[in-house]
Length: 269
Image 1: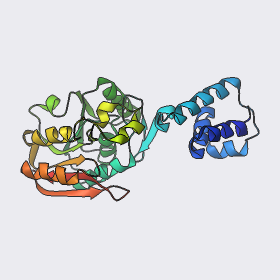
Image 2: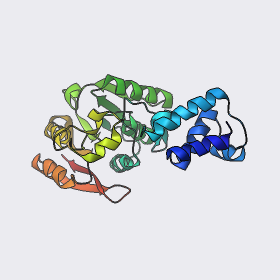
Image 3: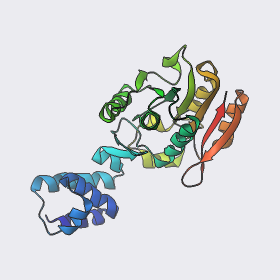
Image 4: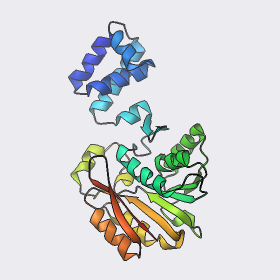
């Protein structure tokens, strides 16, 4: 099979042209530019077979990041597996807000609840190396992925196993971040996300349960003046603002994502 034939196979399956090119480039260990300049070259049987399997999985909706095993987030290349959500660009808004609140060089204590791949904690630690980062997750498999990312990137982060505040008893922080599951259990968008861990996408019900639990349990874990920043659904900003105000937070506000949707809400203790 020629490279040109392999790329044509992607079109026949309805796989995005760029995805097809990048999948094959990944298989060959070559750049996309090299690929396009050598479209008459022949693929080995093993590469052609593996690439055909990649295309079939991509056509079935498997995220591109799972097929290549990595995703870029806030300037870092992270390993991702089906045990963790694929980091989204919109979550960088949460990181950028955190960095605004953390002066360079300040030895702040920061926690990331439900860390998944470690994306948020790693991005903050990379930009603010003097900060002390603790990241939690109820999934031991997700924590293993996050710890591997930290080791590969040479970033010192404490990982603790448990749900939300439970592994942080008796500890206080200057800033806490979380991108919890927030999609409603009956949301039709979940069908398109079937290859990602459902528990990291939705708490079922109205989608607000995890957010409620984080806000309700926050006070004993926040220093006076500390901030709690939360990612949420595009239609949940008003509800999250009400949760924070009801729990006694001040300076409650919302930031919009790259598409202009209200995506992150935070408040100060």
